[in-house]
Amino acid sequence: MNSRYPFLTNPSSSKDKWDRFIPNRSAMDFDYACYMVMEGTKVRKENPNRNSEYQKRLAEACNMNDRTRILAFKNKPPIPVELVPKELVFPSPPPRPQSKPSKPRRISKTCTRIVDAPDISGDFYTNLLDWGSDNVISIALQNTVYLWNASDCSASELVTVDEEHGPVTSVSWSPDGCHLAIGLNDSLVQFWDTTAERMVRTLRGGHRERVSALAWNGHTLTTGGMDGKIVNNDVRARSHIVETLKGHDRGVCGLKWSPSGQQLASGGNDDVAQIWDRSVASSNSPTRWLHRFEEHESAVKALAWCPFQGNLLASGGGALDRCIKLWNTQTGEKLNSVDTGSQVCALLWNKNEPELLSSHGFHENQLILWKYSSMVKMAELKGHTSRVLHMTQSPDGDMVATAAADETLRLWNVFGTRKRVEPFTSFNRIR
Image 1: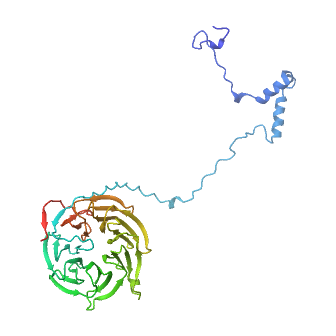
Image 2 (image 1 turned 180 degrees about the vertical axis):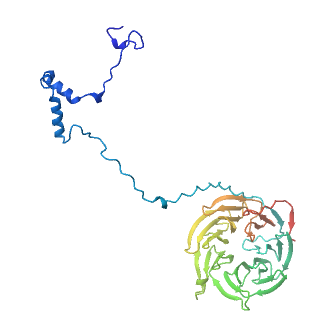
Image 3 (image 1 turned 30 degrees about the horizontal axis):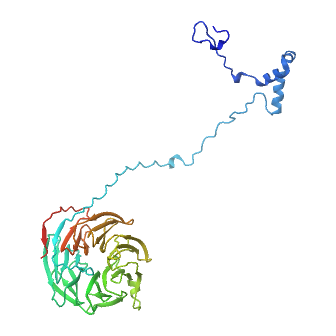
């Protein structure tokens, strides 16, 4: 055993064991210890009750007896009161099952059908393609108008106009899908019953130059001419001209009525888009537009009203502009503008999704699908080898037909989610 340093002794040794002394503070009387240090053991022997007297005086000074605990719960905590009676508490509904995130829609980037359309005009300011509510496509090839039935893929010739009247510069189906309006190069408009294959009447006197744009609003056929005039015609009346709207300085190449039939959008070769309102058009002013948009830098042919937001209009500019602009036609505010990089020839809205489709000219000659309202590019559809001048939509909104200066008519399933048409490479001819 190390006598000099006993604390270094190995406690595990059987011969040399030692215990550690750990003081217990709760068993110590610090007041008494202080008193013993100050007074000595002599006082304690002479007056052994002095410590109790000291604690008694200390208790009196602190206004408490010697058995009182400073930190102690005097009463039990109160019972909580129910704010809502149990009989009024309804059980919480079971958690809803989490739905699986929807998969992104697959966009077909190839056309489903190609139809030969020889001798179609390459004039940007014409409107030679339209899809009627009876699922029949009308297309003008020079002086002849053909009907292509999308249900059975059959084609037929409706009319060939004389050279003195042609070529055909615009076509548009009436809402019933049985009557077709045909605008001619000599300023006349023919109105045809396609079921009976006969011309009902000819509309005269509205324009001095060719009729390049047509738009229906019920029984009213609106015509736009290269003379800058817009004429509303009631096809039921003997005197068909209801009113003439003047506002464009040059030719009118785009016309579209809003879904409500209250507002008319027009675009012209003067780089201007205008909004005409029927309530304003009833005044006596010679120029009665509601809004005049002058921010495009080229001809405005492409116009499209949004099907799910009645006061939203998309417009597209020509080769020097290349922009798609979105307008609030109620306030006249421009909501967005995006540079597409090429001439905008036509615009269509998806009826089932917030998407906008545009057709373009040089150099890609493509279709572009845009996400509204961010205008993020979703897909590009290529196939045409020349600028895609005309674009129209099927009655159910799924299919899109395009016609280009490459003399082809192509069908695309870009909007379709219900139909699945297998693509093929064989060509049909319209004539």
